[in-house]
Length: 296
Ligand code: AMP
Ligand code: ZN
Ligand code: FE
Ligand code: FE
Image (tube, rainbow, N blue to C red; front, side):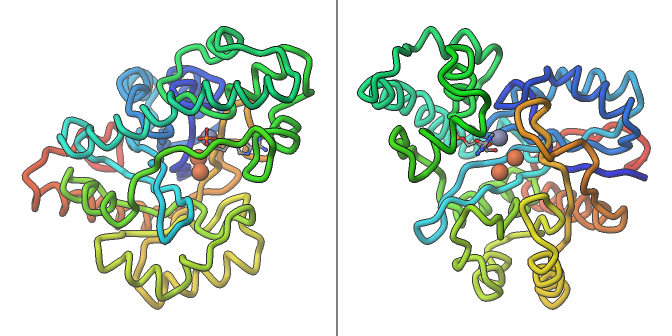
């Protein structure tokens, strides 16, 4: 059983449609696929249709942009009811922040002498519901300013880059509560990814987040070196957190994230699904069905 619980389609900043992503997952031997676009559930329906057709088990998720003690944290929300009012409202706020950031980013690029406007970005952003820096990067590629997304982040868009603009993100503790109230389970994505300051996500920080409803942490991820994985696995074991592993695949949008390059153990997935089912029962929110063999 190959379980990959964190991927992106072109409804956020992946490069494939949800349908194509699920078909490719099937072709590449993935049995259980989590679709976790940034801040949107737009891809769920198309992905579910194809998952049912090809026999992949789809776990519907969202990678929510959050902040905790001043730092950016990505929260994987699995199986929440997307029509839960507070969840919907907060995602709307995050998406509005993304849209508001775009003109400010382009203004900074123009001040650097780059001739780029919103149409250049819309042209390459396709079906996205979550406009982001990767789309600006793609526009810079199409204009011949940089060779790829990586160079765009290194030279302009990264946190210390000259065209970086801050945007709104949800409060992490509140969002964990909201996901639970929406009948879902929360997992911190790549908690110790090298590019972030992760001192707030030490054992004490994670224990605190568990008290407010956190279910698990993503341990096996390309951005974690072997030492970080071992340390995180030990913390998860001491605290009783679910351990996940995943590719964070973005199609052609990010190198080194091939589907299934990291995977989740079946028993850990079962625990995660049980926690989501428990949250759904407690909140009275009906969790959208998970298609496929695992939950039958
Ligand atoms: P945003 O959500 O607009 O703030 O942009 C962050 C997104 O950019 C995340 O999904 C990252 O996966 C992606 N990202 C960050 N650095 C890079 C990079 N060097 N190359 C490609 N994608 C990146
Ligand atoms: Zn992304
Ligand atoms: Fe992330
Ligand atoms: Fe991601």
